Every structure is written in C-alpha cells, then in structure tokens.
Amino acid sequence: MPGANLYGWNWTRMRGSASALKWARRDLPNLDRAVARCAQRRVAVQAGGNLGTFPKRLAARFGTVYTFEPAPALFPVLCANAPEANIVRFQAALGFHRQFVAMAQTRRDGKPDAHEGVTHVHGAGPIPTMRVDDLALPVCDFIQLDLEGWELYALQGAEDTIQRCRPVLCVEINKNQGYVGLSEDELRDYVIGLGYRLVERLESDEVFVPEERA
Image (cartoon, rainbow, N blue to C red; front, side, top):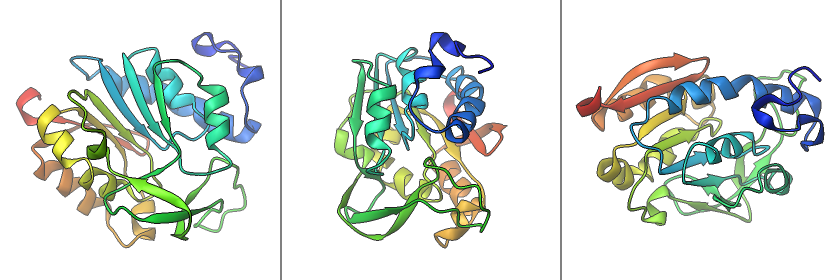
C-alpha cells in the first residue's frame, strides 16, 4: 500500500475497507491545514468519527479529543483504529435536538460506490443525539464537523461553547445540506453571524476563524 506508514501508522493493520481508508487518507492533509490555524491545541471536538483516522490524527496534536460516531457498525472500528488514551469517544449523533435517530449506509446521490464510511441519519431510532454544549468544556480550540448535512444543527448545539471558547471551525459544506432541507449559504451565514470569517476552502471543508483573530 502506498504510504503504508503515513503519520507513523501501520495502515496495513487499520480496520476498514480499502475504499473507505482511501478517502480517509485523502482528507488528512486538509485536516492538518485547518489545525495550523489554531493558536492553542488543548481541546478538539470532532464528528463524525468514521474509521477513527481524524480523531487519531488530532490526538497527536491536541491534549484531549472528543469524537462522535453514531453508526453502530463504525463505532467499534473507530475504537480499534484510534485507541489513544487522550481520545474521548461517544457513540452518539451530534446536533441540537436531543432526539434518538437511526443511521443508514447509502449514497443519497444514487452513485453505486457506497462503502461503510458513507452513513447518514435516517429517521428515528435508538441512537442518542448530543450537543457539544452538553460537554461544558472549559476550553475548546478546534471543532471539525463532517455530518453529511447536519452540520448546522451541530453548530447550533455548540453555540455556547463557540461563543465562550472561540475555536477554529472546520465544517464540511456541500450538497449534503440540501438533503436535510438546508442550503450551503444558510450554513455559512450562521457561522459568519457568530463572528467568524471564512479563511480557507479545502475540498468540501471550509475553515472559519473568529473575526477578532483573523
């Protein structure tokens, strides 16, 4: 496997299909670029945790990482791939409404190349939804969200934390917002309304920093 020791990890022993791991590897450099915007690296919040590559990478850069992965099939994979002691793992969705949801493993655009990393909220079910604000974090330096369209709700559930701690925000913004009845600009406008400025686009990820630090 090319780059089998990327980041010092033995990728040949990482759990997950070749397809899912390929996409996880592709996005790690973008994560590093977003993290470079952080003035301090004490606490990071990350969701969805997926195969564990993002929380694993963040664990090498931050004192504590809180990660959320609601899918029952993916959560044990995350735990196996990212066993670092400074990662706090939640098998829960991240949002605003404290509801119980189900997960589906399908592509909503009709393309056939779904893999185990392609999951999204699909109606009611047994999985709890938490808010970032439920953590009552005294400090937070970075929030990264890849929630297949539910990012706005997760930000609404993190508003107190964002206003108190002023973390760098890295948010996936793409057509997935449309699947939950939102628009990309609606999400951007919400973040800008919190006193943030867009500083970089990295594939589908957009990086925002507080206006007072921009």
